[in-house]
Every structure is written in structure tokens, then in C-alpha cells.
Amino acid sequence: MNDLTITPSKQNPDLRFCASTGELTIAGQSLPENATLLYGSVLEWIEEYAKNPAPKTILIFKMRYYNTASSKMFFNIIKRMNLLSKSGANVEIHWYYQQDDEDMLDQGEYFRDLVDLPFKFFSLEY
Image (tube, rainbow, N blue to C red; front, side, top):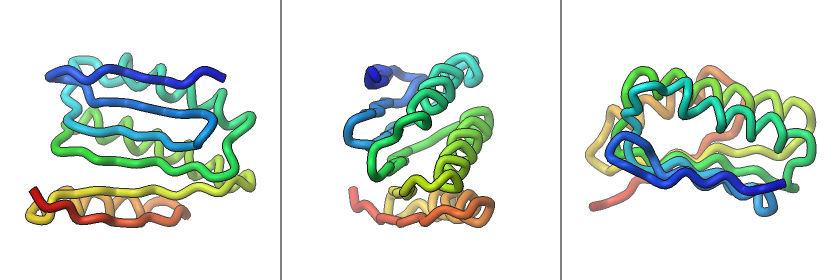
């Protein structure tokens, strides 16, 4: 299976999904004009990945900012990870936030409360 890489831009985050290591990273900011179009390919990749996942899958969020449409797509991605976990896969979510950004921490905690996945939170200093 091929890895998925989407180069960051002013609107799109840096996406690096590595099938062999199970490290799936979304970083930067996400303000796409069409979040469904951007994240549709991500959801398709996850569907294919779920057929033969790595021994451990870590979904990493290192977001500075994202809009409401992106938030909905992130939740769809997290729900897919939850399904993967329920099928027996080892899945974790790593949620990074800037030390002074309580809104980003709150959003991660909100997502955590909606699924049955282990979340680890990491505070970053800038």
C-alpha cells in the first residue's frame, strides 16, 4: 500500500500517512475551501489501510488552527480509527496543542469523549 502525503499550503495541512509504520500525521492549519474534497482522499486511504493495518496505528494531530468543516472531517477520521480499534487493531490518538491554547486542548478532549480510543495529550511550548 502506498503512503499518503499531501503537501501543506496556506489552506491545507501537512498530511503524512505511512502505511508501514502506522504513523498518520495531520499538522499545521486546515482551512480548505472544500474540506470534503481534501479529506475524502484521506478517508479512502484509511479504508484501504484498515484492511491490513500496521501492528500499531498512531493518529497524530499537531494543529495550530482549523475551521469547522475541518473539525467535522477530523471527527470522521477519528470515527474510522475507532472502528479500526473495535476490529482488534491497536490504535492511539496523540493530540498536540500549544501550551497557551486551551481551546485546542478542549477540542481534543471533546473528541476523546466521543469515542473509545486512548488519547494522549502533549503540550508544546513555542
